[in-house]
Each structure stands twice: as structure tokens, then as C-alpha cells.
Image 1 (cartoon, rainbow, N blue to C red):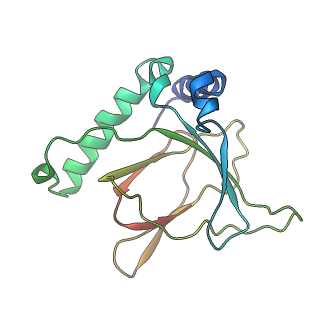
Image 2 (cartoon, rainbow, N blue to C red; image 1 turned 60 degrees about the horizontal axis):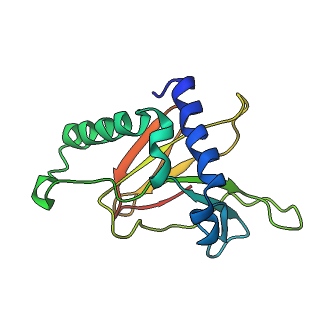
Amino acid sequence: AVAWWEQEMLLRAERQAWKDRFLIEHSLVNRTRQITGSPSRQSVTWLHRHRGFAGGVVDRLVEAVMSAQEAAGWALAGLGPLQVRCIESVRYSSADDEGHEDGDEGWHQDEYSVLTAVLTLALSHDLQGGETEVDRGGHPRRAEGMQPGDLLIFRSWDAHRS
């Protein structure tokens, strides 16, 4: 689990990204997009340029992801050395403009990636939603009971939805 102060460091990196003129000019900050087949939206902020504001937390998460994939026996070493391709902060909104609720974010795979790590962050202790389902071949499994600071890791080609 990621400690509360580490979560705060990641949110600090997000706030710094929101101020970055380059990211703003290239629509890489708070970029809101509609989820295919759903009224839900997500707001994405790319954090690559601001990982230093997280005080080493990203590096610790990368180590945890690598250890977890080795422990899972996924045998990814044949793909060569794995690198961080993308660091995103994603905020989900599950209500459409008329206020209808819909928790289905749509099944998808993360293209051009090998591993996906989902870290649950919450600004308050009353976290609602945020469930992730992963389908590794016809049997979707829901990651239940995720709390702020929990890290879920899966192969990026496994279909998933949040």
C-alpha cells in the first residue's frame, strides 16, 4: 500500500502539471474524454514531466510493479527491459450531463504497454466507485475492496474497465 503522504506527493505532481504551459497548450492537462459506449467521462493529466514532484514515489511504485510481475510468473523478461511508458492521473466521472449514473467505463486494453498499474487515490475517506475489473480470458474478475493507497497490477493486453 502507498502511504497517505505518498498519495499527497502524487497529487502534488498532478497540481504542478496543471500549471505547465506546454501541457496546457498541447491539451495534455485535464483532457476530458467520453468513454466509448458510456455516458461516463474521464479527465486525464499526463504526469511524465512532473514525476520529480512526487518525491521518489513513482520510482518506488515502478519497483513494486516489477517485483509483482516477477512474483506472478508472467515471464516478461523476453520482452527486454521494461520502462515506464506513461504516467497518467485519471479522474472518473460516472454521471452524464443529465445526472444519470453509469459505472461502466467500457472494456479496453492499454495499447503499446506491457503492464498497467492502477493506484487508488482519494481526496477523502468516503471513496465511492473506483472498482476495476480485469478479464484474462472470458472470466472477468473485480478487484474488490480497493482502498486509497492500494495498487492493482495486470498485463496491459488483458481487457479491463474501471
